[in-house]
Amino acid sequence: MLIDRIKQAEGFSGVPYNDPLGLPTIGYGTLLPITEYEAELLLKHRLSLVKQELQEKVHFWDDLPDTIKDVLLDMAYNMGVPRLFTFKNMWRAIEAKDWNKMADEMVDSLWYSQVGSRSALLVKMVKDYARGD
Image (cartoon, rainbow, N blue to C red; front, side, top):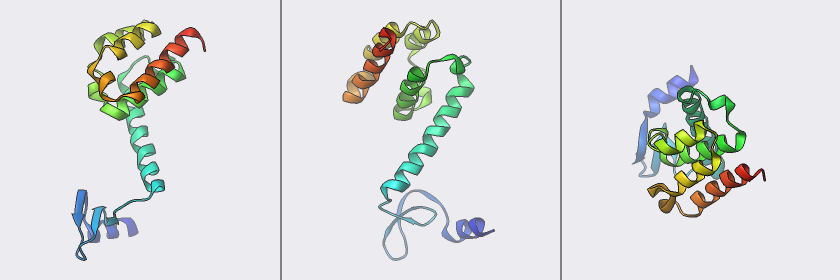
């Protein structure tokens, strides 16, 4: 099979390396820099993995409103699912469908101050949803 043959010939590296010509390369012989299209493909793939992990670990995932799912997916993509699960009080608020408390718990975290406008936008989305906007 072609893919297997190329993988075998190129070898894999998850970190950048210089190919025999000294060109920065990653993966299976992919030259850097990558295109925006390639980066978007990678983003979509990784986001689908995050979504799958949340669907498997959050027993009430399917019952959540789309806005709340989007916020959680954004947060999980940013910090990783394991770290997202450290927001214990936020998860209790989510399970209780207390969206204002969810927003308060988001604000009351180190994450909120670390990511700047991104966290403010996500909190606004939750508060707007709570108000019915």
